[in-house]
View 1 (tube, chains in turn orange, purple):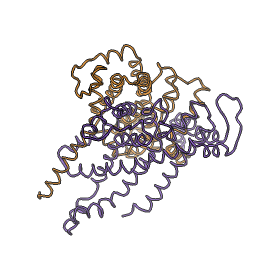
View 2: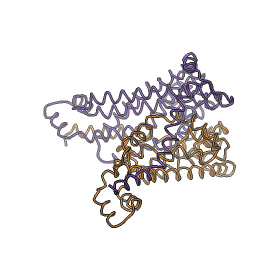
View 3: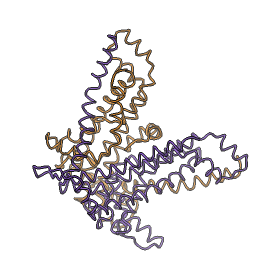
View 4: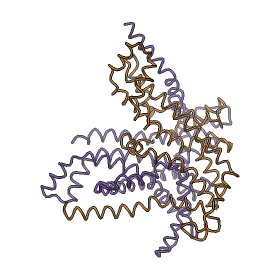
Length: 273
Length: 295
């Protein structure tokens, strides 16, 4: 190693460490502030001098935060399971069967990737109001029950499953659906994990459509609830920060558990559109 | 022959529910949005009249729409170069180090997976006036005068761009790093032997080889900034895109038109405009990719 290499490295570490502070400060600031009293918020302290948990008690007792947490969890889990099942089934069918119309169907599904959600929310809203889906779990969930991107991803991965394996199972008398569930799915677990994580994060953070389709506070998801709660408690920054911390913690946990898959997933596919 | 028929049957059996979904939740709504954009429908009136391009003409004559359109371009024009240059610089630095690379990268990615609504409120708070606004407190500590940030017509949009860049940085860094790591070491070593300095290596080898990656990020980030909504809704007073529409992007305009004043026809026209812009950028990407990728 040359001298200049070493100085480049020291330079890199220094800059990166300074920037890390900028990246992490808002998180710490949010978390610290949630333990401060109203008086302390206005006193310019950084670290909470007399940490209190009153804000958390207040938020869980006198607002709908627990309900919103539950709503978000239900919606994110149900849609993620649906996406995993249907997207891998479609991916499997498109990768492993030869049948007339296959190319058209694939093109049809992939072409929907071009259409921004913002264009669809108006028709979805009209549809929901016709069918009585407004302000319901189903209303919030139905647009995300399958994803064209997931179909694309799963088809890629299903392609690499050897045909011989499937034929062997067929000779053993396994049903086609059985082959899909018992032989193919276990072989594409990494892809399923990636899809599950990103779908879960996307659903948990979704804002525009839940904001439009839900109208009573008890049907809000966490982000919509947080936006509503914050504008109701404007200037009570300690409460807003408590709410923000509550909505962020579940994702930080998911993130810390699945950090490797998340970073790999971004590099692999460039998700979240 | 029989087996083949059976397989076709199975395939369609597997596809029937997803096909219904994609047709009724993606395809028809798209066509319906186009159709609505040529009507004068609002949710209250029972009648839906075909009005041709009237909505589009009205939109382009509406100063608020033009303002929103211009704001949207501003988000792209400020945001995309900023996030790309910063993330490229950081990934070059990250590529220089071994120890701790994964840790640093992890921290940079964290904002990207955090709920945007929470991020918006945290930043909105940080941008406040003293004594609660931490950025202004920091400024006064180093002698910079108090800034109005989100309350200022000149600064609010940029303040929102900065927050968004903070969010998207990690995503771009991961993509850049993955790209950097595909560059063969021999290229860099050979150029060094030939006497190229660091700057020459960067501009003559690294950047050209990363062209497809840069292009990909320019397009995806542009689309992201074109669709900006959540941050603006949560960081401006009552989600209005204020002060005085100075931060209002296209999607917020659409949201207000459709769901506050229920002018579904004209709101749909605005979504068609947004779709047109996104389509244009995507097509441009394909054109450029075809030309540029071969090295």
